[in-house]
Image (cartoon, rainbow, N blue to C red; front, side, top):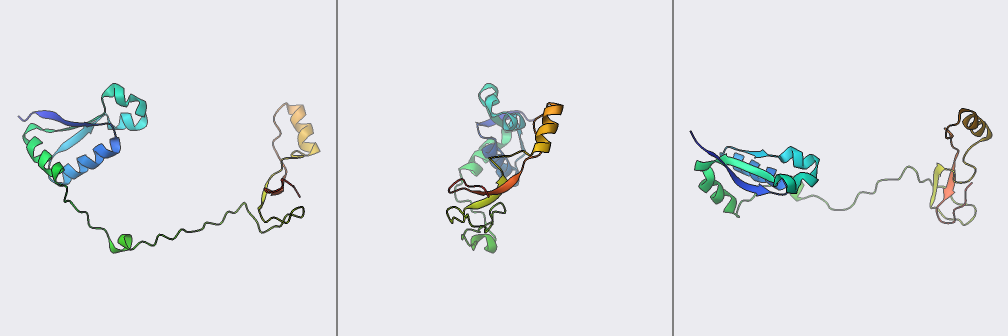
Length: 149
């Protein structure tokens, strides 16, 4: 019966998973311990001693030679290699094409009011029920001059 040994210890669970998958793709049976515990709570990393990669003792020399091979190239698909790096502008739906009547700025959004946020009805109900007001007004707010309209 073959003995299972700790091959290496990693303090980064992602790196450990990459090494494990590289060895599995090469035909070496291996597994990780404490990977999920450290991924959930990284503060346990030092206490547990990191993520340990286990494999059979007979495969240690082969695993070292596989991991020392730096000429491994992973072919990328053509569409990934020819990816256009121009940024895509995502429209901000909270911003509108409104113009501030006070300063003329286009940096205007339809957001929760900062002044006179609550109506009379909301205030009365909130006082009677002793809760925080449940409905607030929304207005156009200029982020340049802080004017609300």
